[in-house]
Amino acid sequence: MKKLLTTVGLAATASFVIAQFACAPQQNMTNANMATPQPTPDRAAIEKELLRIENDFPRILRERDAEAIRRVEADDIVEIIPDGSTSTKAQDIADIQAGTLSADSWEIAQANVTILDSDAAFVSGRSVIKGGKAKGPNGRTMDISGEYRFIDTFARRDGQWKLVASAAVKIQHPGATATASPSPSSGMKPSPMAAPTARPTPAMKASPTMKASPTMKSSPAMKSATPTKTP
Image (tube, rainbow, N blue to C red):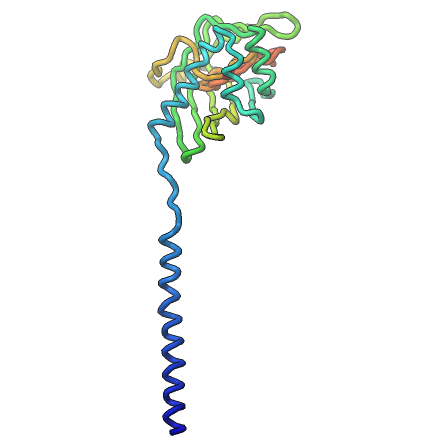
């Protein structure tokens, strides 16, 4: 009898252990199946919206629409203009309101959108500015005409795309790099931002230090006669 009880006890223990191992994988599999998949970015919609922002710059510049800059630029935006100096959202707004930046034409010859995920992307390209002028704090007007390479980084915040970083550099030998066919854009460069620091890029900022980005800005002293732009 004692032997029988011992055998039954061992069998019950073995059954319990086997049951535990058998259930464990099923539980892990259930948890794995419950993981929420990352949404697939709507690439067409993202590209369309970012190019719209970039190509709106000529209008912003012409109409001195500082409100557009407020909407598109992030408060903590990081901007590097062609001469190596930096600009801010506040400076971009002031430049647009004062009308310190102007151009006969601002064309976006190239604009490519690279999507990182549903909430992050960047636009790179080339901008061509003709008859570009930027007025510095000393009252002197500088020529910011030329071609620029730019890159604008966007992040979606609270459902809205914001320009969080922008950098531009002037092309020293334009003829050697103008190989891509121009992208349809209004005669001026696309980018929601433009400040006395004109930008030359789909996000070419124009500023007295003209940036080559959808927001090519130009700072009041036009940090070196190179343009930078903002929305």
